[in-house]
Amino acid sequence: MNYPTKKQILSKEIIFKKETIDLLLKFKEKWSKKDRDKRELLTYLVNDLGVIYKKPALITLIENKPCQYNLATQTINIDKSLSIISTLHEFAHHLMGRSELIACRWSIWLFIKTFPNSYKKLEWKGHLLVKK
Image 1 (cartoon, helix red, strand yellow):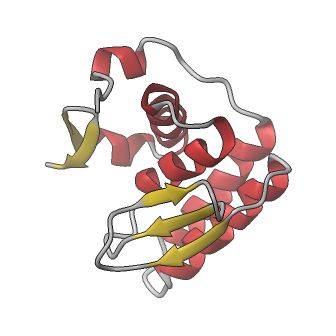
Image 2: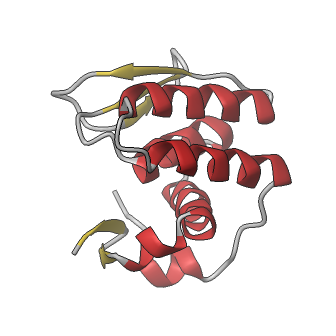
């Protein structure tokens, strides 16, 4: 598969619905608390994004499979890493289809706008953002 480059991903800033930014900022507050269930928070995030975009999706946790979107069942599988960016990426596939560029652009720009300090602590490895 041809994955997009950092340059391609960042070349076009995405403008989000105000509700989406507000949701992520509220999510961020909950995510930063010490006593939290990451899986539960990611499930709420996907459910709430589904409401905003009028396109509900299911979320599952299958630890021995990578994060992925299943078009047939409209299910987002999250893996044991419980990654915000990966979850947003798979939701973007749910919203907009198979394009890796579009899904990367949507998820990464949303993360940059709502988690700017966390973004600065990550480094690019191909089309992925990983901890330094």
